Length: 483
Image 1 (tube, helix red, strand yellow):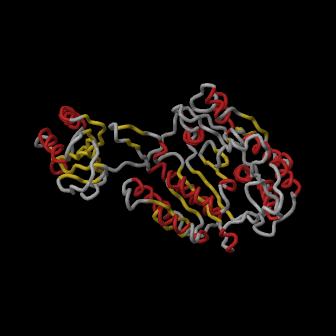
Image 2 (cartoon, one colour):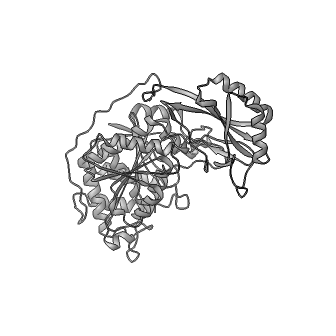
Image 3 (spheres, helix red, strand yellow):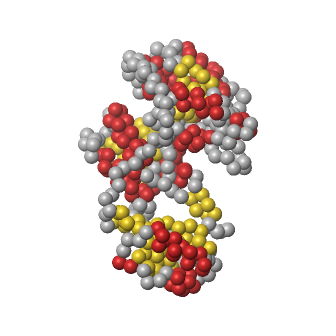
């Protein structure tokens, strides 16, 4: 079986060579095709950080094993890591955090075992990177949460939890504030939960989740979150088990999967052969299990755990009274411990069951879409306008142009209502949202919205607008704070 390998930037080539040396010593039946990705590819003029040949190879092989990569700063280009995950729709980011004996933490010293799997939605949310300056003072980021995208990652999380034998699966969210977006994600969570009655499914508001994770991490098993919240919480969990040097990552898609370490390129130590390869090795072990090489993965992981227990360590962790080893020596120590079992957390050795690679040749972009509600209607529009003045002045201008088919319902500033009621103590910026709804929620068409837009643009600079939709009599838009 052949996979694509991108060695990465900074310490990437060193730790990738170390990991592949361990795989080769264990006779892992893989072939590697090295592809060109990373900062030096950006510097050659490829704006997505990979050559066309690299993209084609990865799409042909379906598996990418990659080292950490740097995105050039100040050049207006997108992160190659995020671009790769989104381009190939690796919708589920799985990160496993476990107590590693030999890696001292507050919890290991207290005898509190940690075994938490974070599943992070990997495509949507603010990571769409769709941002605009609405005025010279006001920036906007669009946050997309979709029903099909949420169902994809949540169903993966439940399936993974079932196979793992998990006792609990938790949805982290902020639906108490973001009632439409996080509310949709939470709704999808409980929709999928009905299909898995054997799993205890519950939800926790994300700030409360963070507090509970740093006080009683042993209470959690599998946690699924939206993209940004999952990014933050997964790094928090890395801190519980010793840092990003022990944080593996698997990016799972239907057609392509990416396995990578989540830490950075550490340019200050690049080329010195002193970097810790553990995170990348753990990511590689996740890849081996994904590919069905269960025996190889167990042998290597048990050797890693035995090595850590015996006190062998690189300079970034471990008992300082024991001399640290370099990257190559650490890899060789693991190789020398093949066949040995750790005293704690030994992994069962299961026979290899290699998968048969499926090479997808897609002719068009897959469209993922749920069944639409029966009755859909547009019942108004939010106009986001630039105006350096008071709320009552905005209202006067709106009332002059809306006519008798519409009513001005509310005006808000930074999400807080300032008209028809509000407080003079609310600071305002030079961008308002003016909500105009049809009288008696009568359906309107887009031509009516276009006519209203022409009237508004005569009074304001219209920065943006959003239609107010209603499905089956339910309003599909949020209220202003204080409305």
